[in-house]
Length: 81
Image 1 (tube, rainbow, N blue to C red):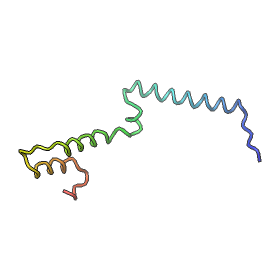
Image 2 (tube, rainbow, N blue to C red; image 1 turned 60 degrees about the horizontal axis):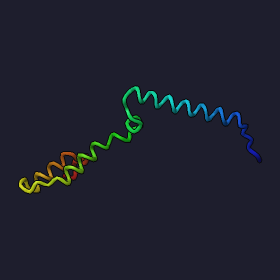
Image 3 (cartoon, rainbow, N blue to C red; image 1 turned 30 degrees about the vertical axis):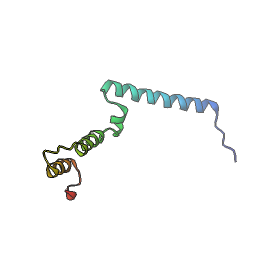
Image 4 (cartoon, one colour; image 1 turned 60 degrees about the vertical axis):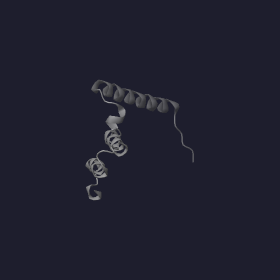
């Protein structure tokens, strides 16, 4: 069994795909959003950075309970706190 794919169809399909990708990038540029924001990969970045800052920022004058409360306030699993 042979699969026959004409070069003309392959080229047209590739050009349509490139045109669609170009249109998506132009629309994203106009809206001011990045590709990661449009797909949804960038939504958790701020939460992860805030959690890491809260975890690694230790103030020895406040004590461990205040540090744990700050960390728990950023946590999504409230049952652990």
